Figure 1 (cartoon, rainbow, N blue to C red):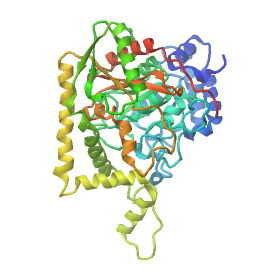
Figure 2 (cartoon, rainbow, N blue to C red; figure 1 turned 60 degrees about the horizontal axis):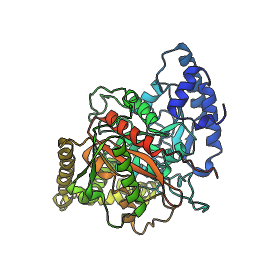
Figure 3 (tube, rainbow, N blue to C red; figure 1 turned 120 degrees about the vertical axis):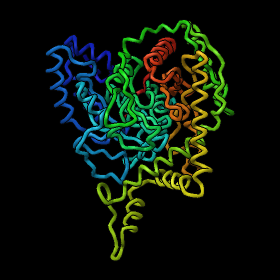
Length: 495
C-alpha cells in the first residue's frame, strides 16, 4: 500500500486490525512526509524516536487483540499541550527551553489509547491569532494555493500548524484548541473537519492557558467519522481540572447514522453580515438546502445579541489572558532577560516580558490589564460578562424552542495571503472570528465541515452549532452535511 499517510483514522484503524499495514509502516510514511514538508513549517518539534517507540508498542498491542480505536494511529500535537520531556513553548519566546516534567491530560489519554505522537505543531503565540503569523517559529503555511498563484496563504489560527499538517497528509489527525474559533476557522481554511466540544468536555489540565473560561481542546481530522473517533478518546472527567464535567462519554462513532429526518436546523438572521461575500452567502444557502433534502426542517431563528459578541469576546479573552500570563515573570522557568548593573526585580519583569512576548500577546495583555483596572472594570469587564450571559440565553431560548442545531458560515472568507492583513489594523484580523466566538462565549459545541470551493479553488467551510453535551447528535448532523456536500478536494503538492 502506498501513500499510507493519506489515510484517515477510521481507514487506518481498520487496515491495522486487518493486518494489512503496521503502525510502524504508517508512522514511517508520516515521518517521511513531515521531513519533505519543511516549507509548510507545520511541525516545529519533531519526535521520531518517541513515534517509532510508540508505534512498535502499538503493533504488539494490536496483535494481542482488543486495542482501542486510536491505537497505532500517528497524530500531531499542538504546541499548547504540555508533553513530558518534549519542548512545549506555546509558540512563545518566553517559554524557550521549557520541557515539562508532566503530560497534559488530553495528550496522556491519547497516548494511553496507543496513539503515536509524531511531534509538536506550530500555532499562534499563546493561541492568540487567526492566521498563525504570531508564532516565534515563524508562519505556518497552508498547503493550498489560489489557482496558479504561488502566494503563500494562511492555514488559519491559532491551530494553523495542526490544520496545515492534516490537510497536507503529514499526520492522520491532530489536536487543536479553540478559544474563539481556533479549531473551526483553520479547519474551514484548509478543507478539513474540526470540532470544538462543549466547555468542560475535554480536560484543560496541562494545556497552556490563554482564556480559561473559553479554552477547549478538540480534534482536527480528515472527516467527521475521524473526528468522532478521536473526540471520544480526548473527552472524559478529570479531577485535576475543576471545570471538567463528570459525564459519561458516549461512543460518538456509533451515533453516525446520517439520519437527520425531523431534526430542526436554525438559520440565524443576525449572521447575515453587511458585505458578506456572495460565495459565502451561496454556500450557506446550499448547506441549508442539503440538510433539507436529507429530511431536516429548516427554521429561521434570531440570536439578537450576536452583534455584541466580538466586542464582548475581545474584552473577556484579553482580561483572562492578562491574568494567566502574569505567571511568566522570568523567575521560575522560561526566558529571563540579561540584566544591567543595578537592575531590580521590576526591571527584570519588564525586560523579560518585552523580550519574551510578541507584539500581539503584548497588545492583548495590555488591553486585558486596562479593562480589569480599577476605573474601567465595571465599564468594560463587568459589562462584557453581562453581555456574555445574554448571548448564552439567546442560544438557550432557541434550543428550548426545539431547534436541534444551528447552521452558519464558519468564516467570512476563504484563506487570505500571509501578510495581507496588516499589523496596522488588528481589528481586521479580529473580524475573522465573527461567526465563531459566540460558541465559546456560550460554552457550546461547534463543528466546521468543508462544504465547497471558492472561485479561486480554495476551501470554504460551514459551521454547525449544537446543544450542550450533545456532540454525538451534532456529529451526526455534520455527517449528513458531509455526505451531501461530497467535498473531496485536496491541495496540489507544491512543497
